[in-house]
Length: 362
Image (cartoon, rainbow, N blue to C red; front, side):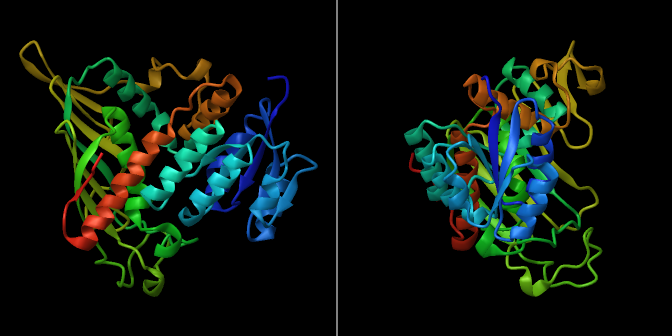
């Protein structure tokens, strides 16, 4: 391309300031941040002053931002409830879209997003940046080379001991669609499905709990939460059976009385070996008639970063996304993959409410 991509940000809250905008700003040789929108105009103004071009525009209404035909790409960084309709409107306006995770509150909303991307021919990806963590790049390379054989059992881990997010709308079921399952469980499930390269679920059984939400003096990492505003689960667990018979156990909690917390990690068990990213990355195999545990040295390189580019997961995620637009290639996270994650999460919530398994028809 002979010009820089022009980026618009919709939603200038925590995730935009913590992940999207600072890492996009590092790619100023490829892009410029030219438009910022937030329902609180002051937030958009602060974002524009910190990250934007000198002539960056600010908006309260995202539809006004989308009218700017010079904008090439939009990042949707709003609460889950609005992911679907904002993304669809942006795609229809001719923009490529990165939407923050999860894809949507429901499978129907996510499916409509995918259909809009196909209809418009614009690129759509979801912000699952943990795929770019060094240990996950290593495991994905090993899985592609079939080092674990057939992966038939997996665990997706998203457990915090006492780390309930007390800001924004995280505790609001209407805005978010759920609690830790849809917030951090979505990362663990995405990673697990990605490593298994398996996106064909057969059935799900789920349970959710709201057991600690009414407690006080909680020793929470971000201070005590307000029980009256805590309208989502504090823990959720899912048993997922895939069409090929593989089983995934998903655990997600913001507050669980466990000694060890493990978030955005997984355990895989295959016919030729296994791997876990709980704690240090460990690969287990049988070699020369002996059980072995391998701990790769991830500080010594050996993983093919994008064109020699190194950085943290969020920076690498933005780098590969922008390059996918410039080079007209697929982004790492395909919308079809993210839709499968949303479908399974919704099924876990449905199963928890009905007390019955959820079977997928297709």
